[in-house]
Image (cartoon, rainbow, N blue to C red; front, side, top):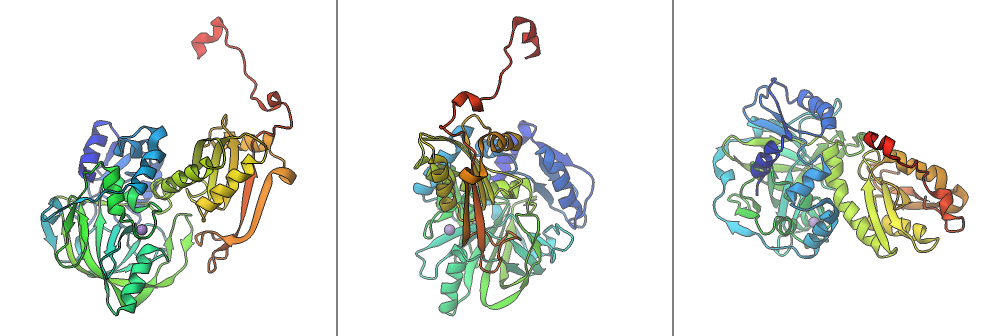
Length: 440
Ligand code: MN
């Protein structure tokens, strides 16, 4: 199970669009990714100006496609994800792998894209970064953006989470942190690396559980790290604990520019790839970015809200809400007040969540028009609105305090109240007679 094998399957299902025209890594490929992203097809750029490798994009941009990558029906997606978090499996370690086929001298031959007008430069955006604690007892895998600096150096954005914690410990011990950087991996690996599992859980083991035990890891040579043996491209290197550089500006999930910060430098010691490798691109703030980040959080919200109401029918971290800041949750409630408890559970499950709407089961959470209709006909602001001030939210939200991360959250209980007759809130139907059946 590799990116290659998944692409073969997608080609058979006519999900891959080949782009023959020669395009530049600077703005042109990202432009087409954004434009063609609406068709939701995987894009294969056959000719890249000044580079030999082909570029593949929009792989994980559709929910159904992630379901086929995990061989799971849509209604079992959250359960499969949650199971993999609670029962990770150790992957097989191998000595040799297809990614070792070709060794490059440095980063200069890789078609790294420059995405947006004011971005600081070319950025690797689909990289899965593995690191081990210096005592060797904690392993971590996460997705990080990497700014191209020169042939052997990248800047890495370390959000204060697990990799940052490993880096701090290495710094205290006066050492640099060994890492592997894998690009072009099976969707299950990307999804696992984006999953909010606790510190101490190795996300490669989560990926292996999602892949039913089919993940093979290669032992790196120049660093103490592992990487998927059939990745398209693997970089080995060290995150410096003494050298920093100004990183950014760079467009993140909201589609606005994230601020500049001092971030550590990665010294790349080895570059290896498969024969005729594909470089995997990922458009910041695109469908794929929002789905990969949002989907694991939807599973968390689904699980948390399921504990306070009898049934959760659907969860959607909407595209307009950046796949991150807005949630719609459809529930079956028992008493009035369940809607507000559902909101509190959702905010606790996903701390970056800013606005949430709870609706009844007859509302389609993925249809924004339907959700608006529920707010229009079932919601009263003086009774059904929840406002929570000065709580931790997302630093990516331009309207929040981006230094402290403090924000105001809003929850809307747009479920129909039990205090009024049920019929008042039902959608009117037109009876279907024999004469009109042909129009169905
Ligand atoms: Mn982690």
